[in-house]
Image 1 (spheres, rainbow, N blue to C red):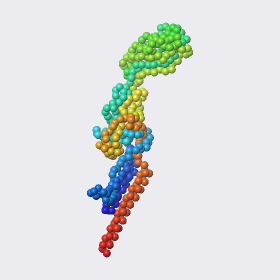
Image 2: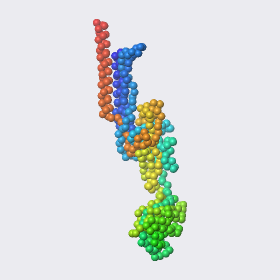
Image 3: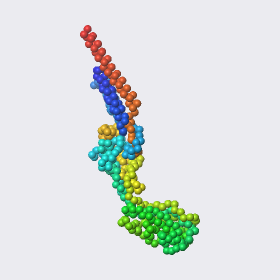
Image 4: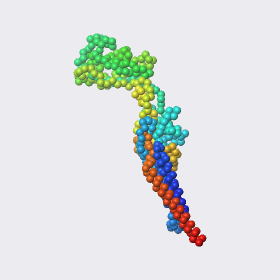
Length: 404
């Protein structure tokens, strides 16, 4: 009996050494989660249920330890780490697996994949903003140009001098500085992304009364528009500050430009003419400059024209019992009955951590602790081996007594 008991100890200690060895071997594996050997004692019972004697030990479970690993900065945008709960979701030919290894890269189709080719899953963007959280899809990084947007609105913040007098010459001419009081310019864009110079000319017609004339590339757009100010310098006409100029047809072959200027931030105070800000909503064609991933997993493509496009929001999954997940290798896991069904969500939501782009989660194996565990398992193995040797000596002595 003692031989068998010691043999169970040897087997259990050997299993413990194997688990510790595997932990140490993966101490540098990104996203790896170490395991712990858990033991249970064995007892034989009589038919009446009374405990007769101990029968040794058995390994009850190899329990995975899903504690947080240290996060290391890499500077590579596609490297991602989950700080807190949650797993990245990856698709292996339609089968969903789960990982904490955020070493992602691009395949030849521009899709974000793992080193083994599994595709990162995300929620696709909606046309009206937000993301479709009802279904997962592969995430692709577009390299196409960003489409231009024609200028449709502009806003000017300026002060017109209250002591201005009507110009000497009339009618207005952009080439005659004596036919207007002040001017400012801005760049606007047509539907093809071509840039044009738009100039606003301000003409004083009477105390508190002005006209604004728009030209594009030197061509007057319609007639001057009336601007009226109160005796305290506030714009009164138009009441909403909006002035819509007639369409301008550019020579580039683009669509006619319909532009509305907002003058509500203009004033007429004493002092000099001054322009504080000029803004417009158009932009030219843009080239991809980079990818940005937010703490909530929103992936954006950024372009040279200042525009950004949402490509998707990285999906995360969590489980009621993470220790019930089945290890698949490559720091990935599969769902099982023991783990429960995956609960999908996004970083920052309740139950999910945040995503750190340009970082990776290191293995959670503590090398020092693992080395101590190795020494303890080694001593357990030696002690059980010594027990077998002692039992062998006792048996030999009994045999020798019988032969005497």
